[in-house]
Image: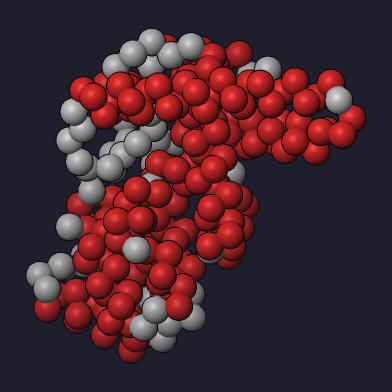
Length: 230
């Protein structure tokens, strides 16, 4: 309804239904269940658009319009630049290391090396260390993010409009959770039109308990990085 036509065609052509990048191997039963859940969520979201015809639910309608536009911007950024996952990871580590001293960064690096996690950087600066860690995590988790291959193959079914709305609903729910649990990271993603793409990396963040890093000690941050890479 509020997408540009080329974005809709791109999503349909690549069968993007279940935008999940967790490394676990899912069976047919779970895959079908996920597809059904996604379509149901999309159908519910489409139903909510009927609220646009009633004054008392205009806030719901406006919220979904905003989410649709933000999602389209995120997909548009992906089409222009396939490194959205690396970009989001870099933004995350920028937030984590923003106020760390060089000594703290060196200590984190040494703790990582102690568990055989080697970071390819010799010069310890906040920006350089964040970039090196983000690159290591992206490579360690196979987040090359070929949307047409990886995501399309995982979906494996034809995407109808409810399926597309299901993807948007999944992205919106994920973004909302992040906004509540880590507002500064959400704001940083939002500034780059990426907050609606966070759901691509949310499984990794849940597995690594990565949002805890905003309050974590240096050793806990090293543990989080280790879990993200392995």
